[in-house]
Image (cartoon, rainbow, N blue to C red; front, top):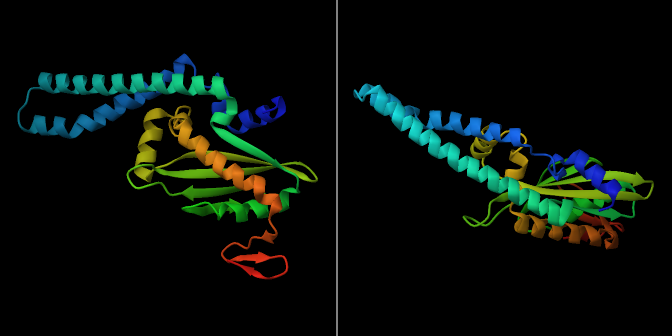
Length: 236
């Protein structure tokens, strides 16, 4: 990326800033893990109180579980931090996002990219905002890979040039997403959801490959219907 494009990316994606995580930011997952441990041990603690187990034994049990959970999460945070920093240092922004500059106006690029995204296997358009973004959901392989959410954003660079930025992240169940976000906090969560860099880069490469071929296409996309060629001939 050029310096200018890198500045644009960092403004939109804070995790591309090498100083995004500071030492004091470790306090957030530690606090989240502590609260999770208290909630996790609460049913057993209540049962113990009801059956006459001493408070001292219950506190020892809670402390042991909390120490284990906090210790595991702290190690996980250190690993996440190192892997994220190392990959950002070695690969730059391309480890987490991809972009393609198309020689066409923003409106045309958006319409053609909207059509291109329907060609991705196991993909479904969740939402889109005209001329701004497209959000895709790509199904994973059962018990092998999780679903992914693909955000495609558009930036007009002039009359006949548009930058398309692609971001890919895990798509988990609402319950798991809520749990992860509450434990890790807002600064860590984007990193946790994007660290499978090999799969992430495969997905980004697959989408940008479609985008590179967009200008060669001769059709427009009508959402909720089939493709129509410019000469009104139906295309499957």
